[in-house]
Length: 154
Image (cartoon, rainbow, N blue to C red):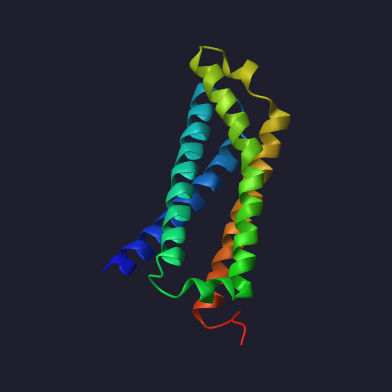
């Protein structure tokens, strides 16, 4: 039952995260208003929560050996590619998260959206969001391939 629960939570987190990062990217292309910033911050928060759940359930599934052994995963080049893509996503997200956190604090202190929001920076984060979503989809294709027996050495 544990492996089913972990797998389900892993996939639910993936779905919530993917939709949230896409929503964040879309909202970042809108004109800055309190409502648009609220949508950006909400989507960003959901993306963060989903990512934490997605990563933690993934780690549990690998190191708890609920499906396969740790050796299976680390000898599979598709799994290693998935982990490399995750590192790229996390690296891209670092600047975006710091920037959006600063915007959130400034708006929380009562600053107007127009003074907080930079269209140029917002476009960059929107692009990063859509690149991250694309990388997540690539990770899904790698996971599906692994489940079908591809990527194993030996």
